[in-house]
Image 1 (cartoon, helix red, strand yellow):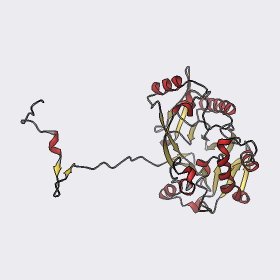
Image 2 (cartoon, rainbow, N blue to C red):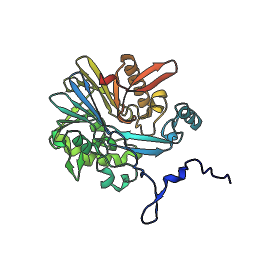
Image 3 (cartoon, one colour):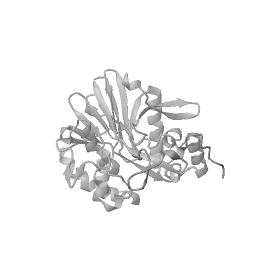
Image 4 (cartoon, one colour):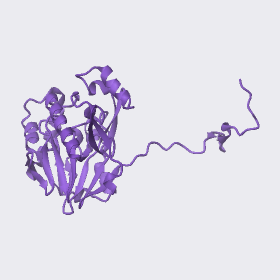
Length: 325
């Protein structure tokens, strides 16, 4: 052993014993702390993104790049300094205040993990309603809830205990998406339980709903865009006010490296993988060409950035302060 230099302060001296004789350190660890609401102006609109929940998932491959090799996926992960096995999967709904209406895009997990045993270990509890309330938006204040598609992490917050959470809202669904889940034809095995959830949660809201196709307006300045592939009728939304433009892309791209830099790679949860690839390429080209800021449901919080195209392809560039000016 090396002898201690008694002439110098020792790091061990930070440990003390309390009156019970237990060793005590100066400060206890407090756990992770991250922001959960991000709000900014878009022309005369106000936009907020909300961290509903996040999960850490195993198996970067084959979740991403099932049509590529594991070595290729891990090489891309290493090149971008992200873990080669695990990945963070956040849920980030978007709220747009037009000055006349509060329009919420998707609702997160809600009470699904508490109410359905099948989801208790896969989905963390959703916190969209609580976090909106903390930011000054009560559930009963929401005028419109737009459901971009019918997957559980987007519809879970619509109801709790069988009752609508946003009780004064009207609902917007893509007509093709709603029709697909209601008819229940050609639903792949992995989505059978999803269909049960849709029938329980969404179908009872039909009499308070508007059914849209691409090109239709939710409200002045908010227009539906075809993004089908991840789900049969997925809609993205183009938002414009006073010359400022923005897009809510939902699950068009579900990971900021894998889905953006390699849009041709399959994502396990895409319902029509070839169509999803074509949609990703089309939407990414639109975002890069038009230099649109985007809110993306599964990107790192606050889920806001833009897409840049270079010789090596597309890349996600996180928002810094551009929307704060």
